[in-house]
Image 1 (cartoon, helix red, strand yellow):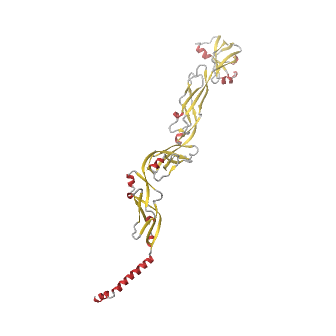
Image 2 (tube, rainbow, N blue to C red):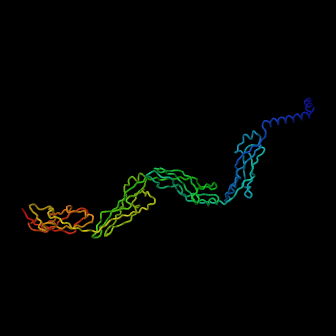
Length: 423
């Protein structure tokens, strides 16, 4: 024990010097293997802390210039620097410490105590404050492109029709409209998709403003695709024109055809469109024109293919004044029907020709010839009308029935003097 104590006390200053030299040698060796150095980390994003303080004052902030991006110089041993990433560098600005729109930036390195210093090229971040505003906007549904040939867009529906936006008043005031747009090019079937909401200014320019917050960014949209078909329109008339006038038999609908649209199942059963309300021509002396609303006659599930068509159509029933024309019909052409057995009928007067007056439309009268007129006597009908049971041999005046085609009639009764004899 005494020897050890003596060794420690002997030449003590030499021993201290030896320890110092040993430490210096160790330090030099360490520094030689892991020297201290600096490294610059560029474009480090400054994080704002306690931004809820802006919300409490109903304000929003906007970073002035590029003050929220900094370059940071870190001094540390090389072994530490080699493992650092930009995400390890913290640049934080506490909103609670803001003075005149400037917030001091505090720099640090996340989870590392071996760093000697952290310095940024900017000491503060500068912000502008503005009142926060909320606004509700009607959400428009739009589509681009054209459905496949023979198909059309029947309608669009989103799962909501209003959108709430919030942000700086100056930015919110620029927003004039909001819309979702879906592409229907060559579509034959209905579409369904989640579509992004786009904001527009008064000039219909898209607004890309990060300071504006939308209540939702996407809405679900359904687009109905309908099949198109062309159908003919039919109408009818009712009643009788005034005395001396005739219905020409011509009825015109304008437009004569329309394009309709509906789902394939609905439209397959529609081959025409019939106006069930007849046009009344009672007492008419001129053409009767009636305006109708075709939408009243569309089957359920069917619409007009032209969105600009209001459904109106006109039905014209043509009326003409009755005309008269005389024809000389040979009495030898008169047909005897139901003449009693054994009786012989001979026309006594007129013996050659009889004048047949016909009434009808000019066009039909002009098309008639004598050969197209049939004159006949129905003896059974005449005898029944005059309570004649047995036709005796005598001379009688018997009416002749005139038969013609179309709307032509014989307004004057013709009587022939006929002699009846028996064999």
